[in-house]
Image: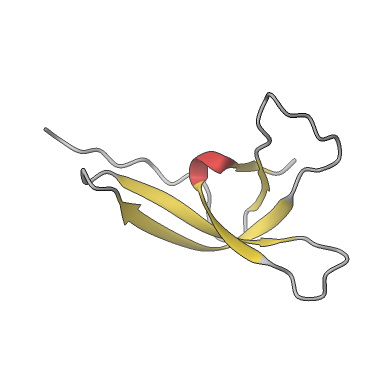
Length: 78
């Protein structure tokens, strides 16, 4: 059995938004941020996936928060 790796969708400094599930609608609640790091992890069967560290744009928060997300959760920000 061969394992394939996904291609990297985003680069450092790209502006992204977190996807909102289709069954939920929260107008104006889209979270936007900038990618500050990329890592590649393998699952237990050897498939590689990309994970991105995102610094979120929080206008009310002086210490902007960061979190790590798989690439299928993020889209390019408009």
